[in-house]
Amino acid sequence: MKTNVLFFLALLALIGCKQNVEPTVKQEVSKFVHDVNTGPKPWTSETFESTEDDFTFAIISDLNGGEREGVYATAVQQLNMLDPTFVLSVGDLIDGGTEDKEQLAKEWDSFDDRTAKLNMPFFHLGGNHDLTNPTMREFWKNRFGPRYYHFIYEDVLFLMMDSEDYEEERMMEIYKARAKALKIIDGEIEGTYEESEYYNMPERRIGGMSQAQLDYFTEVLEANPNVKWTFVLMHKPLWMREDEKGLGPLEDVLTNREYTVINGHFHSFSNQMRKGHSYTILGTTGGSQNLQDSMAFDHVSLVRMAKKPVITHLKMEGILNEQGKVPTAP
Image 1 (cartoon, rainbow, N blue to C red):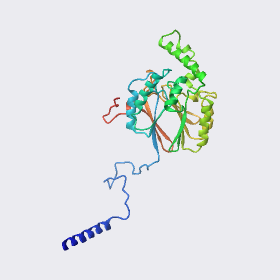
Image 2 (image 1 turned 60 degrees about the vertical axis):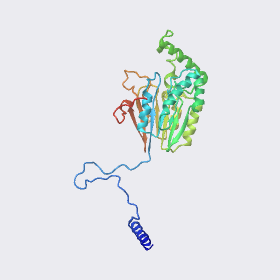
Image 3 (image 1 turned 90 degrees about the horizontal axis):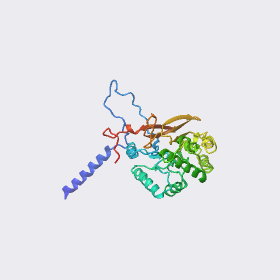
Image 4 (image 1 turned 180 degrees about the vertical axis):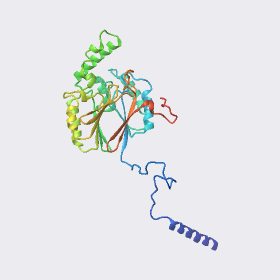
């Protein structure tokens, strides 16, 4: 019994000594540890960038206008490797151009099944292939909700616009003219595509938006005047249209803030400064390409949002896995 008591007292004394030697203040552990303590050092600086309150998002471009099989599925794998916070789109996600609801369901199921393999949220945005006629407009509403919308993430405002925002009568005129032009291209009827009604419609290249959409985004901007940055995404370049159905009236509201405009549709990459701001037209992420156009390439865009956006466009052919290869679509 005496032996057990002595052992217990000794154990208490040992615990007490251990507690006494523990530091009362937690010591900071250096982020950069090395053993080169004297003389020259084989690095340029020991001043490292401090942790910033930033995030990175990605953008994909056109899949359609003649989708090439496997490209988008590969892009999904590459985006998972790059691990952005979320992914945005600029439209033309399906082939579309039909009033057949079963066909539309099949095409959207195919796109959404591939997109579901992303490890992060994806934001839909419609293009002319996705919103060609009133039937497709209704299909979009039932599946994805609003055709144009906004959201704020980490004090950054995103305007997701609908560049196919026409009155229903005008939409049907464009739809029928487009259907006829496609028959000319396919050789089903005689004619020259460049002389067709559709080819000469301004909406074919630059789209249009309603007063209702302008009013909506005007209210959004007026309600959020002090965000860190504003991104304006659309499919067709509404900013090229010079009347009231173009982006001009909204650009007037955007004037006194930092913003960036990004769209797709042309399947050829370009960037320009307009009104002191960056306007980018993306290439493709699986859509058809003009082989004679050096700026027609498949890519994804990464935007690191720190004090201001740092935008990097990555050609898919250069995004390699650990084995040094472009991931193979499953």
